[in-house]
Image 1 (cartoon, rainbow, N blue to C red):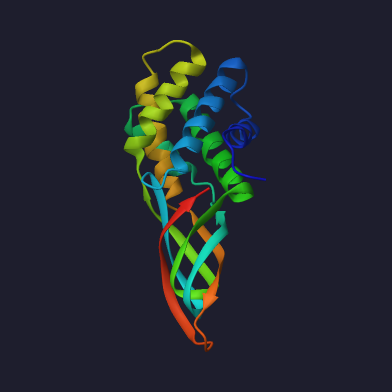
Image 2 (cartoon, one colour):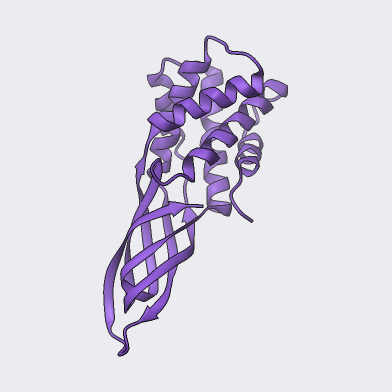
Amino acid sequence: MALTANAIATAIQFASADLTGPTASKLFSAIGKAVHAWITIPLNVYLTGVTTGQAGVGTISAGKLFMLPAIPLVTAGLAGANVRGPTSLSLAKAVSIGLAASISGAGTYSGTSLGVAVGADLSKVVVANPMTLAPLLALNMIGDFGAIGLSVGPVAQGLAVGIASQVLTMTGVGVVAGTPVPSPTPAAGNSPFNQVG
């Protein structure tokens, strides 16, 4: 199962016991679409890793991503944008848990291994740009709600900072496959620019 916007939105909705109704569903849908569009563009989010195995050059085609919930990071992002109160805490909890569940359940990454042709890769997100996520969140909220409200900007900015902070905690484990050098030589290398999706 691939990571999709619907999978992200559904996981956020399952994680939300306090936020229900058509407005919540529209908000979760907007978040799912924005995060999926954002996270799969390498200039917004990418991983760097270390590879070990046989010398050469190889590719990582379906590395597995892992993320734990980080509710305080999303809460802090919302608070930093002056979005506070019991609803913001419920939103932070749902987004953090849902995002972690969807990415850990279906998230993959790919990239190139320099120095290792056959072996293993361990990667970590090193770039997660909230400035490119905020407009996507705002535009998807406006599109799903059919109108713009006063809270769209602060909620989008706060969620962007919180989500990007949580995405920076994401790690991945992958298999490197390629053509090794003629004589099997142990090697260590790196995977400098891996992308989600």
